[in-house]
Image 1 (tube, rainbow, N blue to C red):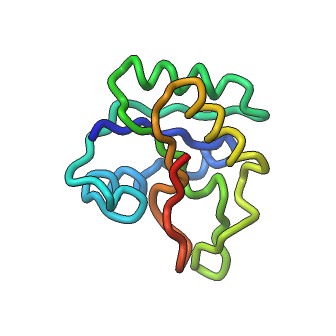
Image 2: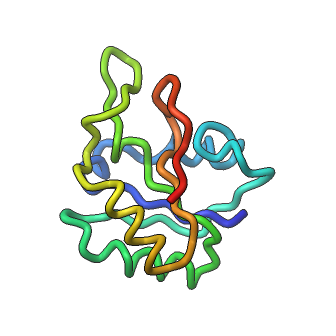
Length: 123
């Protein structure tokens, strides 16, 4: 499966995507539903996300068959563990729906460091 990845600008100066890329390569965490996965590209979404549909279209043109939004967009790290809620993006579900509607691709909410008990959502 060819995967596009969208991250949040609020974390781009702190996170080099090491966890996301490792999980993608090893098909675990948010990528566990794939037999194998290959990265087609990464974009950074800038608030308020007005261009996210275009980012998705470019990833699709580059071969992406699914687009994942990084876990930090909807979760936070607290006491060394990832907790659901209060992530960097207040409208992550709306952005996922927008990308799906504009590209026809499945958009997945989650990458690495999934909160305990969280199952990835596909839009």
